[in-house]
Image: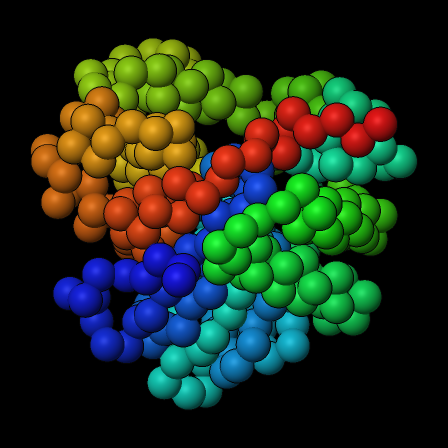
Length: 309
């Protein structure tokens, strides 16, 4: 059976995580009355509101999504979510690494160099074709996850659905990112993004001994006050909040690679395993143990390494 949240979780929240034939792809099925605070993921997320409605902040402002809508977010895009017009809502999501788009869609209109930086253009859409493709893909992944004896044919069916969904995303809901020259233009509101990215990279370089605010400000060529204000404006979170979520993303990657929970907590800078569990569940909607169990079923190669020709 799919992995579920610990019995200690609130009765108003039920979340399941599903593995897939590839290490770089997973899915969730969540029904929740919770208000998820501002957070981000290192992967793309595309899903369906199945019941109820949700109000949320996104990289493109405030949005509302209703039953039947397709919702999506980009890697690093800060968002939140709360029920709208009722006590709870139910949704299914597909999450995939940036490399998946590049490897799964050979006939993309974009060049290979930019595929991994593609931006999904809007957090909510009523695209019927995409909704149908996602429903088929998510159904197949849940069937694959629940299956006792999985075959190459089952994985092939999942892969076909994944390619179809990624193709629709690229052709109908994708845009190229801002170029480096645009980001550094004095007339652009993003003129300081390159410096802020350097500071963020510096923050991510050592999760166990992160730099001080003074060091981050120096890396960006800003005062500490400027860094705090511009960092939060650019990335949606303060440096400390971003660091905690980066640790959760690193934990997700280590557990997927087979690391134990206690080992992962120590390697990612958490005070202990329970601290990791609290932050992990708050960010992803399921516990590290549920993720570990789901990833134990992913015996096929990463989607980023599957040859399609």
